[in-house]
Length: 557
Image (tube, rainbow, N blue to C red; front, top):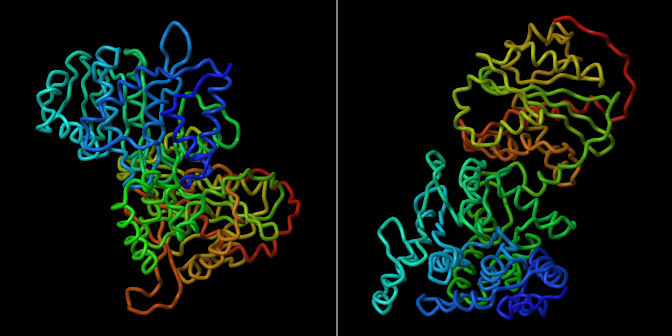
């Protein structure tokens, strides 16, 4: 059944379809999807409700631009046909470039949700963010509107506000901002939850607490608003992955409106006409356009010092401010299925800082140019820094990517057993680990046949070995030759690592790099450094011809 698209929603769709401003492939796919939904589904837009919501524009110092009306109409005013009003798109996931005006849009939505025009009584809106500024900013923008001298008397008939909350007098809904402590939120009765700047979220703690309290009020809605950022393997990456599946691979939208604005490729940044792909407000914000032009010039001159420019303004992650191992798209490309490598030759790398913290083993295979890695990590329950790790390591344990060790330390026997079991399936030609870490593992490794005195089996890695491995690693990343399976722990560890010029402290630039942690306590690098150790000795694999190996039998420890 074909349903009419409201002209205020259609305006943005036609802007995209007619090429009146640049739009990326994600937004183009979304517009096609919206047309298809109205053509094939039993849905409708409540035109009267949208008209009333848009009538609030006169009180604001700005007017909604087409993409904002597009989101407002679909998210807040479009429903399934039936006796009960159920939102067609319960959730909006909007990623736009910094400066697009998302806080202004959120402020406008707040005004609508607790206005007399929202028929759902006691429709509370809770705003969640990592800091007070982000949690309060949209509400403070709305308060500025309420305190505008021209409109203050009229608006006070419909809204009541303090420094901390805004309430609708007829609707009885209340707006409140919350920072990133999820404790004590179980009593919420949210009609709408808005998560601001989700790129900073490292796990789902807040998202779970706030959304599981929904359902007590009719027409529940969730808003996810953000620019891109440098936190990898967090919720935003999951949302972007889901958007990719829905927009381009035919997956159902499950009630989520994915509005993802970013450049299609980083090379597009050099053509100003492409900038609206990441920021659909630019054709209307001329002062912002001038500001981004100035930032672009600085970025071209010193990209390392202005790395966040590409990420924040254009939605393409460019790595940390330090020299990153590689850009995130290349790390993401490692997520391909691993082949059956039974009988293949490999190297094994081990890394740990302390056995009372984290420890990792990496099995590294080569077949021609292609490299394949199996990576496993042990996490000690007594790690003093574990409470600071915000990554979803418990999920990784469930996925058996990591093993949780409920003990005062990680026994060397656990690592030795893993290598012993791997040797029954693969031909481990060389074991590699940091020179200063051998002592702690030596006894357990000797029991399974690895002695540092035997240079044909064990390599004790020094910084010079890492310097030699780094160009190889860079080439493998650049060529897309790494395959790791779906290992978010390893991908996370790469993004926790920076490349450091080997003689920087002495004022000499040799052009060689070693690796260091970006942050010493909460961002672990052990999985990555285990891989580096295994690559440092990959020359023993030659071009990676495989060979069947005999069953070695059980080796007692």
